[in-house]
Image (tube, rainbow, N blue to C red):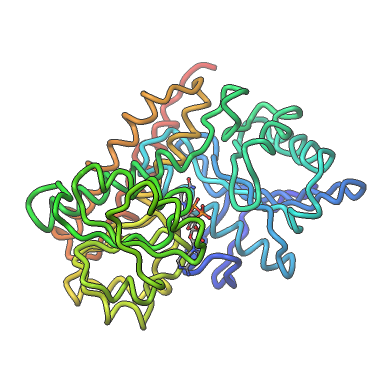
Amino acid sequence: MTDVFGLSHKDPSPGSDANPVHPGRHEQVVFCADEPSGLYAIIAIYSTALGPGLGGTRFYPYASEQAALADVLNLSRAMAYKNALAGLDLGGAKAVIIGDPATAKSEALLRAYGRFVQSLGGRYYTACDVGTYSEDMDVVARECSYVTGRTPEHGGAGDSSILTAFGVFQGMRAAAGHVYGTPSLSGRRVGVEGVGKVGHRLVDHLIEDGAEVVICDVNEGAVERVARRHPGVHVVADAATLSASDLDVYAPCALGGALDDVTVPRLKAKIICGGANNQLAHSGVEKQLAERGILYAPDYVVNSGGVIQVADEIEGFDMARARARAAKIFDTTAKIFEMAEEEGVPPGAAADRLAERRMSEVGRLRGIWLRR
Ligand SMILES: NC(=O)c1ccc[n+]([C@@H]2O[C@H](COP(=O)([O-])OP(=O)(O)OC[C@H]3O[C@@H](n4cnc5c(N)ncnc54)[C@H](O)[C@@H]3O)[C@@H](O)[C@H]2O)c1
């Protein structure tokens, strides 16, 4: 196991996510290897200014160690910003396990990983991400006290997409309030791209609020599930058709990079607000959206309901408390839009400033000496 302090990566190559954030200095990066079980993992802690770093474990067959390192550095920094704006007393961290989860995952590997997480003494709390599930976290927890995203049978929060979708809906209400003067989505035409775990729950909230909903998904089963539940929902063939449709709101809820140089000029929607991570294909897209008068609700702000849900496990999971905290995504999103207007910057830049302000103002308090 190696600790590499103060790594500075100016120009990382992206891993599996589009639009990487550019990492600055990370507090700690730990390489963990256990040859017999095949474990090779990297844990990156970007900041503990607000508390221990929380972020999921991505299990992915990276093409190289360099690609895995670039991904974990980007993702851990993004978690610091997300957790800060979610109002959590948690810093930002993330882990990657290199390998194909379909073939490489085993009890021994997950438990070996748990022992490395434990070795950090609580500086890092892990959770699920691409390639890891609540059941895996139960196994990791057999060796480690710093695990969230566990199954309800083990006191866990279960499926985090419940509050992710709820939070996206709150962000969308704030955006509607900003653009139309009322937060109601009633009568608005909303396009949801990708009706998987998050997207189909978002459709439930929208229908309940009286919106007209248009969906698409590459998975026919996912489309049928929504169509059975809500026969009034319109279905279109693909994401390109959806994003160019006559919509009030466009909600990317599939993969990253939905907003690019091809999609943005065709958009008719006045609001972009969805659950997908890294929606902007590159940093220039937000300016293009602003120039077209389209309000973009920053993805990491509106999709933070999931991390709010799993973070609640640290106190002993209480869905009502977690839901109340996720409801505040409405206020945070509204505040970001106001700040963006006042400071003449895009909402993404305003969100980053607000997150950095909280990390610095609250993080600074550690400088007030207390007897331990
Ligand atoms: N689950 C969470 O709690 C959570 C939290 C924060 C962010 N997110 C992000 O939200 C997004 C969705 O997550 P999820 O958990 O719902 O995943 P999911 O895999 O359950 O759903 C994604 C859906 O998108 C569909 N899809 C893929 N490519 C598509 C395309 N080109 N066009 C249309 N549909 C397409 C898939 O078939 C699937 O149904 C991801 O970007 C994820 O990183 C999820």
